Image (cartoon, rainbow, N blue to C red; front, side, top):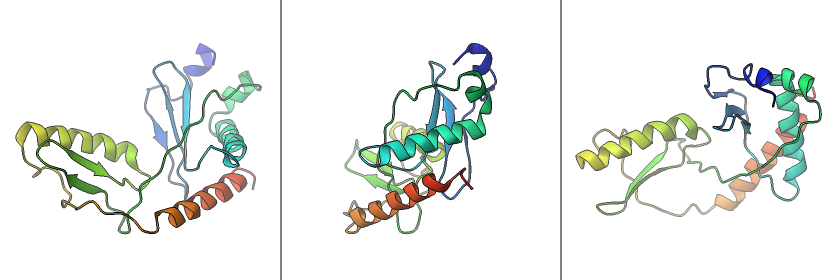
Length: 166
């Protein structure tokens, strides 16, 4: 992306995300590349659908990119699993003296992950979880994880197929 255009994309260096039913996020990485995020698997059948959605959302949110460089390429696509809980509250686990984790940010991990990372560091410095505002949970398997994952993926694909087309 030309420097002139890059200066108009999130010029303060902040990340941004929306509050749509299916979240979209935007940030610049250390190399100045625009990182666009959302929900959905970019493997197999989902690849082209989510890639086309990413291009449409870039064109809508940052039209100056398309105006300056209409044939831009998306370099990478990656995905992971979003850990969802029944009550939409993250889970805090203690696995012995030196192992803890906070999981299941329910699709909102950017802010929460940053905060809980700091709180986990304090846990190790103070040997106390008093500053972590979550109960301690025992780790357990989620029986319906596969089915729920399919439902979320179907919803993300449907949403990305129609978003910015109506």
